[in-house]
Image 1 (tube, rainbow, N blue to C red):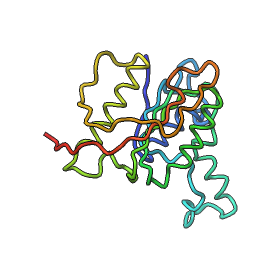
Image 2: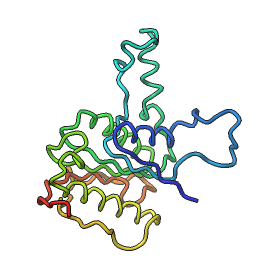
Image 3: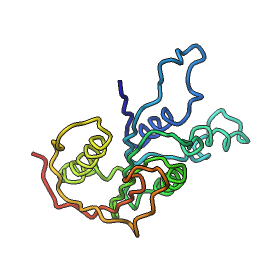
Length: 197
């Protein structure tokens, strides 16, 4: 069986933690059955949790940094992590830690694809119920990613409304042994407006 973990925002961080942090398994868990997902679909995940999140909690102030690191997927980057696709708006304050993850993951020959929506904020793909184009386009790209892994067959069932992917800069060289798409970072231009039918 193959398991794909995914989510948006905090849910995406939980999916990433399930893939990267193997210290979360229960002591009496059957280790012959892996709880690690085989692929990740991450919509604007917070890859680094800020220490300030514990302010006002019962945690001792001098433990905030330690707790933040323990709760951050970026703490657990390692070789052999599952292939991942990530989506962010370029105006999302959570983007920079994700870029860090992508750089470090690529250096370890892990496959990670990062798609950036120009001038869009956190949750850009579901912010406007009158404009379905970002949502449908992100699903189309996700479908293509999962098809490239052999998890889906055929063409995407969602219509692709734009945005045409262009490299963010010169395409980064692939690390040795890395699949062809592992170094992909693309900026998405605004798709044409489409109303939900």
